[in-house]
Length: 341
Image (cartoon, rainbow, N blue to C red; front, top):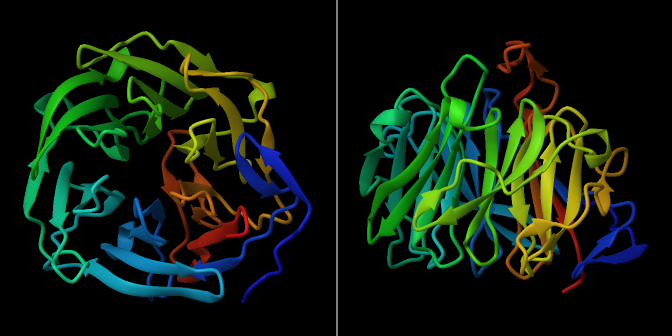
């Protein structure tokens, strides 16, 4: 059901958003089994999103149109897709590939674009994690603005090895060139994205709740964060995903245990968050968020998409639990209109 867009607008660092922003539409999981919807990513040129349904072992593509409900145009599913609880899926910057990080077997699948614009049902290649991170679990992945590098955050519960990795992207392959592991990172990494110039990584940590910026020098992730946002005034609360706005002047973070998405002003020349306090917070009741997770901006800044888990629980160790009776429709992705086209 379409919900009227609120027309009280405020400009935030190049984005035009509503003070009280309600979802344009909410798309529930149509499967008969509940699943975490861990990630969402926009096509680099079109209003198409890919969404991971982790426990349904599928990745679905939807077309987005302001005047009509999203339409599923393709689903990558097993056995052909060889998915192993897909955690995060992203388009390559040239739109010729989809890369999927698999939770269960710690691998990356690459699916190639076909002549009809859709993607191969079978992965062209499956790449194991580098041996130092083989016992880690993937969370976020992101391509650099130039498309030559892929970064990965490995984080789950506090008893599972964690780390960050940087890969060089060459044709249909990914070669790891740098990593930080376990005690070299300040917490449990979750979301990851590149700065607009590709020289830094923004990483969220669910425990302790923090957003850190790491510099990349000579192809190496530097272990000491250049900047750390942490504390009550930041609005961070078990943060999950982090994404840069299309114009590179702010970033957005999903806060799973506070049911918010917080926006922070970013200086793309200094590669720093300008202030600890968020510029603006997408919050309930208007936002209709319930454990928000993956987030994505459309390339033209028209839309913001957010996946959410619904009524799940977090254990002291950081695991996600839900009852077997939880309705599959608790897992959704919400679409918000940031500005009129």
